Length: 89
Image 1 (cartoon, rainbow, N blue to C red):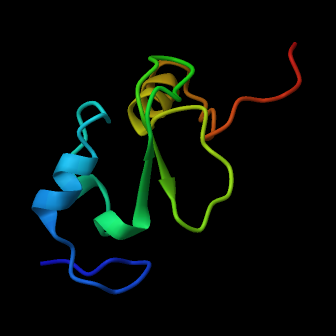
Image 2 (image 1 turned 135 degrees about the vertical axis):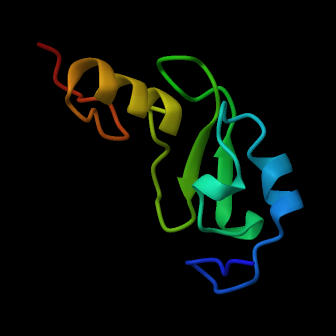
């Protein structure tokens, strides 16, 4: 069993898996936080319209879910980061 990197509580994998369900193709193994320290915002990804994961220490909601961020990185070779650039080119 892993400990949450944020609060050091033992991670309840069943609870966290249920909470992460809206994030496509991700499981509890992709995170090192417990369900109490993970915030899921539904319908927030600008690419796929799926949910995004927000660490408790962050105040802004990411524009890309982890899967879409990874897809863009693989496709373009550039990491888009969690948020879209506010300056359009």
